[in-house]
Length: 345
Image (spheres, rainbow, N blue to C red):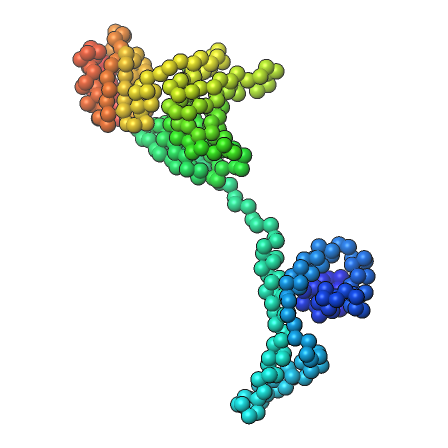
């Protein structure tokens, strides 16, 4: 027998190994003790095999190996010649005696399978990188693996791992999104934009970070969030950071890298997540930018005079034409709609 090639299953099914485990002081014990000294690399398999064998607490010792072999040969012979196994000619105790010896080894084999499955490293759940991109004129609600909800505004995208990591939940954002974060103190929720990092445990807040804007804003509806400037990673100075509470908004300037804090109007900043367009003295450029994203249109201004009057209005799930009809007279401009193009004149 080439014991050097033995693996865990071979040790479990070896009768001499069984005897050593049950009674180390026998001749078998001397052999296996010496074997282990010469093969320390197999110590782990031997220990596992011993644990499994020690689970087997029964074995019929009322007969010897030669008797079992003889009984087994007789059973095979009767089966080979098709002899009838009626109660007068066949002794069922033959099977019982053989089974008494075989059962412990069968159980050992079964235990080995289950034990190996339990002790082998389980494959880790692969992380998928999920990306969601929303074009103009659309919005999307995304439910994350931790139960958090993200409402993604038009012309925006997010990227995240599914499932999240063990230590933190990271989402990358470009554009605008409203977050309702499920509390988890052991895994902070982090939203990264190009220049800022927003870190929370459980709260609701809005982040606006369009690449075409000169600012990034973080508005807190509930709870607290920590905002941090990550644009100057190589600087020796610690990054600028600020804690925000309910009804506070941080505005970060991409030009000066300064962060300012103020209050905000929930209708104007958060209204979009509830389907509401709100303007309170908005300039024409701001108005155009919003309706282009909201309705997926292109707006062209064909007039020489600048529209100086601020735009005021609150619109909930209304069509583009209804909005233009509602404000064009007070702002003194005319308009035309041609498919996905709007002309202001």
